[in-house]
Image 1: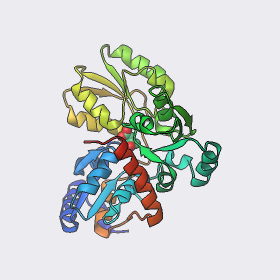
Image 2: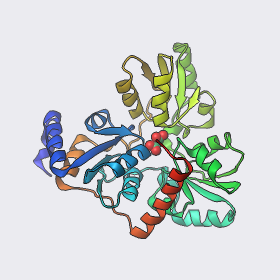
Image 3: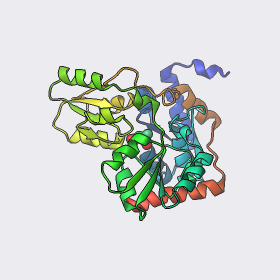
Length: 311
Ligand code: CIZ
C-alpha cells in the first residue's frame, strides 16, 4: 500500500490538481458521488451529459467518478481516450439485473418489439438493443421507434412511467434500483405536512406510490433545471442523496430535503479522493471494451441521439 494514502485532503487535492495537468486529464463526477468528489470535479452531471463532455474534450485521460456502466458509456463514445473508473468495484445492481443470455430469450418471445435499453446497463446489453435512452429522454425515444411494441430494459419503474406517457405497448423487464426502492410514501407525506408549499420532485426509477405523490418526475439533470426555474423555496428530492449536494451547491438560497433516511447508493459512494489520486497517478482501472461490442453499443447510443437530438 502506498504511503500517499495518508495524505490529508488538502494535500491530496493539490496533488490531484498537479497530476491532472501532467496527464492532460479531466475529472467527471456523477451527481450521486460524495460531496468532496463532486467538489474536485471539472464537471458534475448525469451519465450521458458527462459521457458527451468526455467525447468533446481535448483531454487524453478521463477520470470518471461514477459506476462501471457510466465509465463504459464514456469509453463507447471515446475509444481513443483513456477512461479511468477510480473505484474499480463500483458496479450497479440495476445493470446487473439483466444478462445477454436473458435478453436473448426475452427478445425471442417478442420478435416484433423494439428493444429500448435505459443507459443503466452493460455495454453488452446496449449492443443487443435497438436503441438506448436516458431517464430524461425515454418517452421521446420510445415514441420515435417505428415498432408499436417496446421491450424496455432493465428498469421496470422507468418503463412503467413511460407507459403513462405513450400509446406504445411497453413490455417491462423486472429490474429496479435498490436505492430508489427504499423511499417510503409515508415519509414524503410527513415531510409535506412539516413543509407546506414545498414541491416533491422524484426520479422515475421510484416506485409507483412515490411517483403518485410527486409534483414532477424527472431525471437528475432535469431536477436541477426544474428547481432553478421553480418559485418554490423548499423541495423534497426523491433520489440518491448525492443529488442534494449538487442542488444545494447550485441553489444555496433554497432548501432541499431527503424524504427517507438511507437513500445512499453504496456503489456511488465507493469513490474517495484517494481513489481519484491513485487513478491519476498510476492510470489505474482503465475501461476496456471489445471492439465488436463497442461498435454495436455505439450504434444504440447514436440511435438515441438521432431520435432525440440534445443541446
Ligand atoms: O443516467 C444517470 O445519470 C442516472 C443514473 C440518473 C439520472 O437521472 O441522471
